[in-house]
Amino acid sequence: MPEGSENPLNAAVLGRDQSTLSMVKDAIAHNQTMLAYQPVMQALPPHQPAFYEGYIRVLDATGRVIPAREFMPVVEDTELGRVLDCLALEHGFKALSRSPDIRLSINMSARSIGYGRWMRVVERFMKKDATLGERLVLEISEASAMAAPELVVDFMGRMQEHGIAFALDNFGAGTSVIKYFRDFFFDAVKIDGQFIRGVHANHDNQAMTRALVAVAKQFDMLVVAESVESRADAEFLVSIGVDCLQGFLFGAPSVSPPWIDELKQRTRA
Image (tube, rainbow, N blue to C red; front, side, top):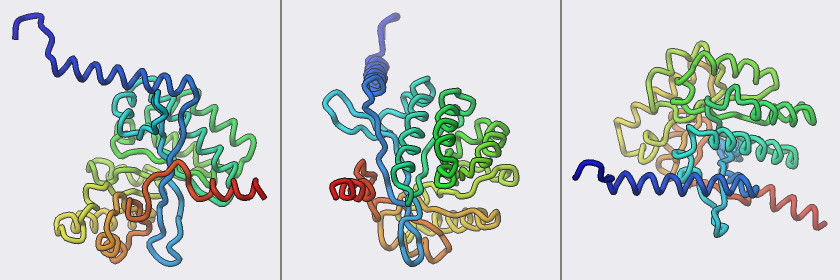
């Protein structure tokens, strides 16, 4: 390639990323963000939702709901990523305020710790109703937690004063987090989906999953298995002591969860 010429692949990636950034900026500017909710089911009877996970979504120019996997990798390290964390938290608090019978988990990046707007969202809603924190779970990925473990530990201690619980997302994706378990204040772990999909027929993943469950149980943590897609996988996971199951077997993330329909019915009545 002649010197000074542009790599077509790099140009295409850059163009795609710029388009994604513009889409997210426009969605934020026009208040076109929302949460999609996926149930996290109790593994044992009565097999009810233990809580729901709220995933941030944006609408594009045509009104399509865009899942986080399409834009978060591009914006996560930018100011837009911090704003989306704030909006996800705000949507979550509003849902908890409207529906007192539900519990929600909301994803956040450790990069948002110390971000002024995020903390102001917590303070604003907790001032209105101090009990909201008791139904909120904040999910921090293993990679994000390990980027600044001391900062995360301090932050978790401060948030738990509000009754807020914490879940370690993507548990097992790395290895270094385990040595910090005595310092962290995680109430739950969510085993990474790479070990869960097809686990009933994969002996290596069975061994890894058993080990992760044993570690979490040693520290009295609730164990959630992510990406549960088959009944056979679910039955194996229940047999080794997993507490909750989450995945397409029980429902895809939806912007119209059951309690919204119930609220509409009560409003009409």
